[in-house]
Amino acid sequence: MKLVYFAWVRERVGKMDEEIDLPSDVTTVADLVTWLRSRGEEYEYAFENGSIVRAAVDHVHVRPESAILGAREIAFFPPMTGG
Image (cartoon, rainbow, N blue to C red; front, side, top):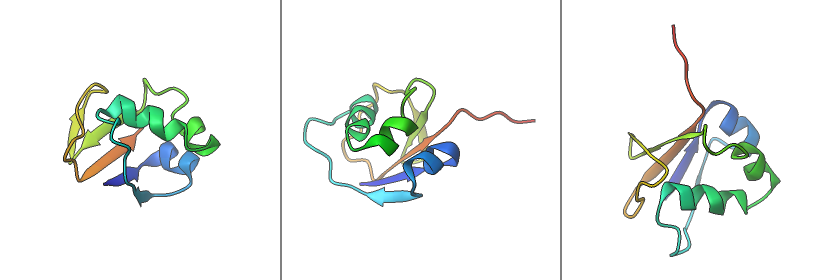
């Protein structure tokens, strides 16, 4: 599965994207965020306030409780504002 990071999430994690193999017990976006936070301080910092980081599964915005089984790509990004 490919993970993609945008804006300050990317800056905090220290990479634009990565390919990962998930543990079998990681089945939702929220599980993924919890697992990522356990991978090191850069991930802990990026997801320290997980409630504001948004996710998209295969280019569709999703909620934390959304399933990720079969996803090809999950993107994480901070809240966006526009004008």
